[in-house]
Length: 419
Ligand SMILES: Cc1ncc(COP(=O)(O)O)c(C=O)c1O
Image 1 (tube, rainbow, N blue to C red):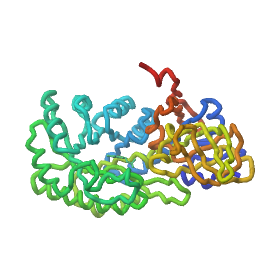
Image 2 (image 1 turned 135 degrees about the vertical axis):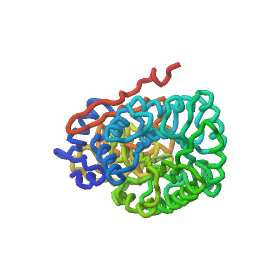
Image 3 (image 1 turned 90 degrees about the vertical axis):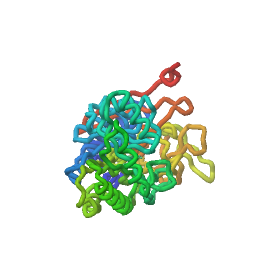
Image 4 (image 1 turned 30 degrees about the vertical axis):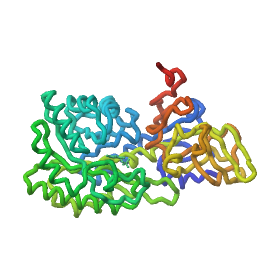
């Protein structure tokens, strides 16, 4: 029996019909048969609900969906149709956001290594704000803006030195990380920045990390940022935007309890009460993460005596999170046939021991050709995929209210090997 009621805690649009999983009423097996596997399937309604939840919890804020989580323009378009702007970190993400129709006055741009070409593109487009990460970036941004006859709006990304208590690779707000500038030096940096004629200093930015299930570090960080805001106002700065980044965690394991945008808003309300600036939020994972399911097909089964392996056609090139963060993704059969259970590792075809999707899982004893659904795959899934082993990247499909459409076709070998 598929326990679809448990799966609905990940995404309320999952259910089952005749013991076969559906997303928004569309059969995952039918999608796998039509489009092949590995296949990413995203629920549009889930994304809509999440943007609405953020906008309801923070009615005066600008919600900029973090494009890095899932850059498919159709996904950005869904978020944008609910009022979201875009948080970008590259020229490519700017291009994707514009392609999705996001207006430039709803685009904020972070990242430690923006190139001259990327800065030129974003300045020419007059995006809402550059979240500047270093003194040298301020200088270069000022030069380019001057050359283009523009003024660039700037927030300085400050590093509040708060431990978000998440995986070290996705902690960004600690002193030793490459991101932002040390908050204790921030006032001096703002004064330095204010001397540049082609920069308009309009905001403060921080982002402490990703996948925060315990949201208390947010409060600590935003208290420090609010304190900086008051000091800057005293220095005569007109801070119009307070950008507090993304980071809300999501349910990956059945026992995980997700914080909601409303809880975040309640937590931050006392800290933000004296602040006369527009709040900007940059959620990524919490918008698209549990919207997405990766469907993969069983290729071979292997019993090595001490261990069972289920070898599937999705590898670390399709979903790298387990390999690089040892991340847990819940894996369930697309169809339950009421068989016995075994304990097995679900592994991909890539030639790396780190190529696994799930370890030591209790799963129905599957057959070759069966499909598995890898949950919580809508953020940092396709977006982090690669061509390793000359493997074409997966196709992507969106489902909504019983309908579906292909939003990215599967790649072929010529595309990968293009000269
Ligand atoms: C600057 C910035 N904003 C927003 C995000 C999105 O974070 P999340 O997907 O955890 O919401 C990130 C993620 O790394 C980031 O670096």
